[in-house]
Image (cartoon, rainbow, N blue to C red; front, side, top):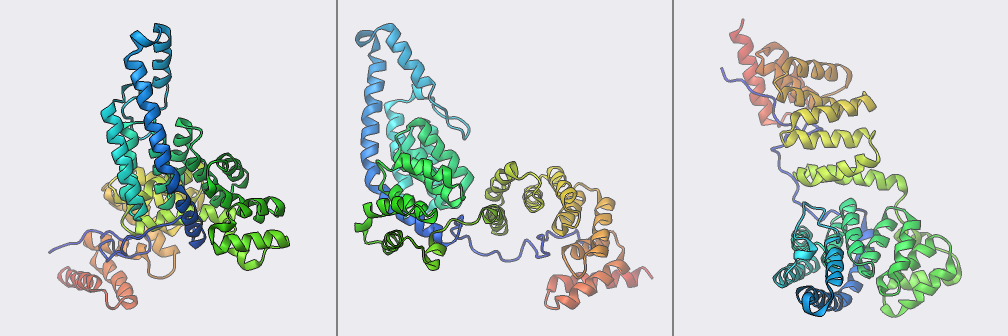
Length: 425
């Protein structure tokens, strides 16, 4: 007699083998962020080539001085310069070539990777662009332009925590990198951290016109109409309808509701919710590896968020880390004992570790206390069938089949359980 193991059901009871929605660009916030980033993006490109040319000239001069230090510089000066290069921060993504060991060939390789990254970024291929920028900063950890590219590819792709890290690296390696300073200002605005947003936008403003738009929006939302008008006026000739609306509102010292809705940052509580929502969206697209850092970053700031703990548990479970998943589910249930998704996850984590009786007990409690047909019903039915408790399995499969009469998999298992019942009597 063939028996079935509990199938891999998602937290809502759907099978993981069901057709998943196609991957899509996953932005941190709604179309307001899309609009904001597009304006920032359009103003970045013109400065990138200039920054790159200047940066390459500076680095080549420095390397030449180091290489020829014995004849051009005193020993002390050479050592001081070498120490300065070696103190440059290394790549936080696992290390790379140290600053002092960067060769001309490394410079060329990093520049080529950087250029490929920006080409992909401009084409909307954010994941591929991110890979190129990450490779560039691994070759040259002091490459501020590439760190900036890494930040923008992550920010445009909705990875706010990772984007912040990259932007900060860009600024750390070059505190005049206006594009990265602007990136931090725009990112903090979307996180409703308005003081930090203002700080970085003001730092960027002398050399980044994109920051003017950000400051105009920020000051208008804050009711600082004179400041809003000042910065809106700077980009008034851009032909952007929204900046014209911002300028008009600043002059009238009144923000229409429609404009406020368009440019206001999300409420702080929604920022938190959006982070977790993005993690679940990635997970439901079958992108567990990308969902994991989203949940982890969120939990560092909100360690008692049961929804995020449950999400991380499911990521760990589906990637085969069953014991780690169990801990996250147990933590989630300590925070919220009624969290059905975590109950089901805990049962599956236990079952995967061959703790089948413990898993069945969790599912039985879930079926008893959570009304209706749900993921726990599927899990318990499959566990009963695997354990050859056919009569118990039949009862549950009949409930599931009544609610989902088109589910061929359930029909097959119900028939198997019925045959098993007859054979055992």
